[in-house]
Image (cartoon, rainbow, N blue to C red):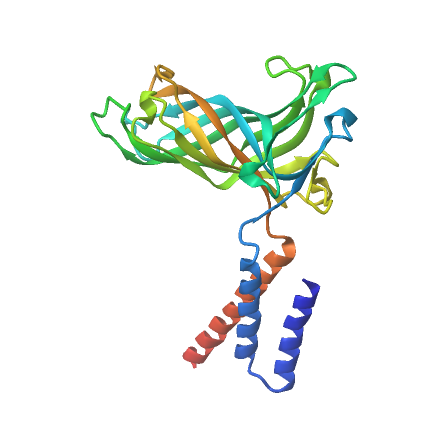
Length: 311
């Protein structure tokens, strides 16, 4: 990255030395800045990342070459109607969710190599679990299409989007139902960022077992030191907040038959969920600075053009 920055400066100096117009220099800086920013895009998916629990408990191991974690569990969705008392675009919802990670895929085997996340402590005869809990999730629905009557939502189709925020924790627990607080360790704290959302197909609210789909992007705001690492040993906790994201993608949501309950001005639904989780490295500040340099360079062209027209 330093080498690229030096090249940009060199282009500018050379242009000035040869009498190059400022307009052309701005084009070079602007285009290079925008090009470099697009390389990492929103996030670069990490291959072969590491979940190292050996520092917490040597019996829980160092799990390497992770392609993605696999989680399953359930939660509760509360959907509210608008003032008209019907299911329409823009109606808000809230959700809580709890997933347990029992398996993971490894690199380079991918779909052909799934392994059990072995978290058994032989010394104390204790089985540990990796649990993901989400509270305070919220969002709204859109593209709502009622297939029958306004009072019958069982065959409606709709999409939904999560608004940024909420609290998501990844914890090591010794019991899924009643974990001992003394044996519970928070491994990460995350929050929902865009893009996050999903789709509920026709009949989803009817409880017929048809899957809805979700994609959640969760940004790390805190990580337990030594646990989350890249393949080359970079510790997530050593970098500022916001460098890494955990994506829950291809998530499936199923409302079992009879699990939807009407409430005043809305409904509540129990949902069974599951999906795959990958990690990504989001653009570092130098890339963001290059984007800023690119926009400033292009803005400079616009300013000069306006001055020229004003003469």
